Image 1 (spheres, helix red, strand yellow):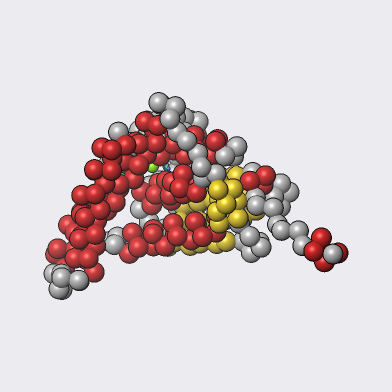
Image 2 (cartoon, rainbow, N blue to C red):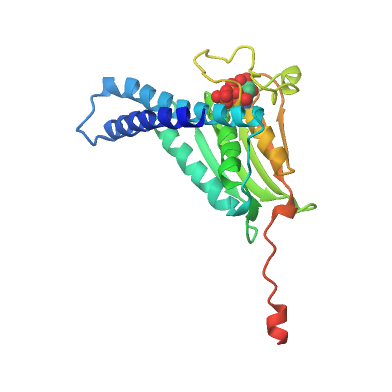
Length: 240
Ligand SMILES: Nc1ncnc2c1ncn2[C@@H]1O[C@H](COP(=O)(O)OP(=O)(O)OP(=O)(O)O)[C@@H](O)[C@H]1O
Ligand SMILES: [Mg+2]
């Protein structure tokens, strides 16, 4: 599966790259009527890259071959780069959403995590917010819980919302809302399952809240403070 997914990714990268260059006018001015189909090509290829990625992670989970590489990483940089990526995606949309990023001013967000996998978690949550919000806003937040010191990542949207009974099964494998609004939404129902698996491996928590259909959703991830990189203690140096 690993090799196959790499081979799938290469042509997709080309499709993404060329369609975005066409859209940007690298090959000359694109007539207005061609923008919509080009956007479709770009967005679909982009979606496919991440479906493959989730599918690959699922396959690793099932074969118990998922391995974590915990290393020091800056969650702030991670979240910022995801935000930038979605800003670019948003720019290719006909109906643009208000994307907002808020990072609480705390000294640092350095943590011992598997950065590549945690990025997929955050990515999946923002990806969902984009997919299930047809108008309005997406607010992304990174901060620390005052009491516990845990890292908190939050994505709030003004989208289609989630019914209370569905909220409970959301993080199961292949779980999908019964009717995804416009019906044009594609997905495998893996994003949240994979996200939960990865967050659990970080000894963290992930959950969702929604006031109900049509009333938006909020997804939360908490990564324990114990994964924070301890600050260098220079008091000793001073004493010497
Ligand atoms: N922000 C959201 N607003 C409304 N519904 C959501 C939101 N995020 C997830 N859901 C619901 O939860 C289901 C599961 O989400 P999940 O990310 O696991 O799968 P998916 O988005 O359908 O497919 P993919 O595997 O591509 O992520 C979705 O199908 C959708 O019904
Ligand atoms: Mg998803």
